[in-house]
Length: 331
Ligand SMILES: [Zn+2]
Image (cartoon, rainbow, N blue to C red):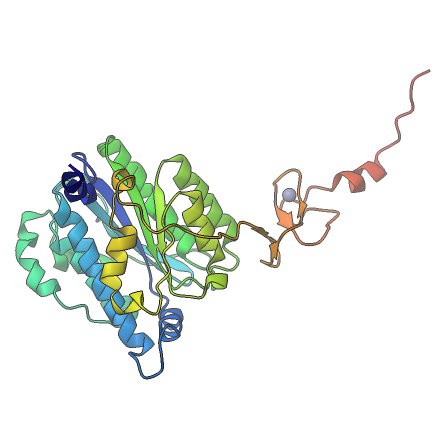
């Protein structure tokens, strides 16, 4: 009985499961975070990055291979941009996907955005003919799809805009296959989300309300990934940072932490997240606060007291009360 439950678990039930990979192309952050995860004589950060994305491509292909009802989406992002690689625009999300398609999408993303060659895509291309689009078409789409700026001319993280794209894919999938479950897996170095606190948490709340879990795999030290920890915590997803040991076998790490479908997590629970820092961050400085001033209109949080909210420009009650004429009690 238990064996049968485990064997059936990753498929996500008869309706299948929509998994959307949100992948970071922040190469410098990746190389430095992965490089710091091992001794100097070990593999370099760049070599580990190649190994990690090789594993992601394999993980993406295996999700579709687990069940013919499973679907996958791939969204990439970098500093100030995001792009949707899978599903192709206009493609029905309920149409069949071969295992070669997600592999090719990840491989194309690696080649263009990270300068990494992921091997195996050509070998897996044989069964792509059974799907609506071929790996070649996926790469072409990636080439044409102009990155959408999350904030023009800024170095803001593209993660919130990538999560918004993933949410749109989830909404489309819910319309097409109402009974299926949906989840998102973010694979990002972790650092670089400073200043994205509000949009990131908004994405997390929206995902939580839609019943979508967000799993997160990072590589940076814990203190640099607080926002992502909160995103995983809010959506009841797994937060699974790579460690000195798991960085050597990233595919195993992905299967362990993000392999079980949402419906299988009662049986196959991903590792528990310990000690999440749930403190809010100052909207202006990004500093995490235990005690803060909160705007009573937009609920923005600040380290310092402001007579006028810097976000919504509402005057603080005391400030506006001072200018108000005093009400005299009627005789
Ligand atoms: Zn305000």
